[in-house]
Length: 327
Image (tube, rainbow, N blue to C red):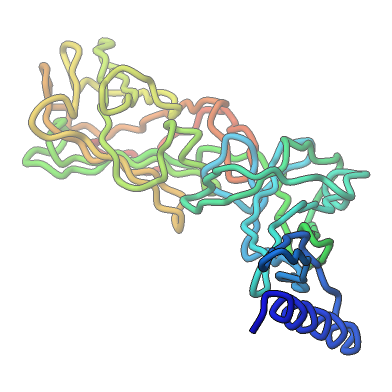
């Protein structure tokens, strides 16, 4: 077959495909690629995209989050999404826009920008700029996403929502339990349990903490007969946002640590019971035995926050009665 005849045949096939697509009501995205056969040049429809992108996952999360899916009135948040373009030969995603006007008044088309983001252990490829929720704001609020590809195929997806929660979390109890050989003496295996009125975001207690077991150090300070303790990170350098506890007893006679040595202390978050429990590691220092009944007092700090970002109340809470021996 001669070069001219081959060119004519290929061009005819291309025109036939275009005609067939038009007759079937298809929208074609004709490419501008060209080909040359011999001395004959021609342009043909190389590929087309008629399928809109689809969002496979999305979530709203506060700034400084670990837990996602919650927001508070007047709080800041991001919208995250994963999306892909469809079709046999996708043209690529051009834009993803969020209508969050039910959360932030007037925000009907907020752009999501491609990047690498992680929320609660899940990777996302798109995120908005930081947004501020309206006030007042309560209940569950819906939002939508519209994704458009480079061939102008567009898809609106609904059914997404965020829970608005504005209640200030509080401390409700502080307890210790004996895990060693002697009641009333700080030992390896003893536990300290902080109880909150609701789930506390672990990221607000310790940077990059997910709530899983992690190493910490508990520092005990000798204060006559009212010794205190506070919790530090595993390197014993950064104070955690758990506040301080007054034991109301005499458990150390000099500065003492639990977790510096062969066995670290460990901390874990229980999202069912709203508790953070610390199990003491190796004890380094001078301890005393105080088996009298005591009622400890915990003073939390306002820099901790819940899943929606509500700051912790710093109001002191006493150990729930009855008084009993600690450690």
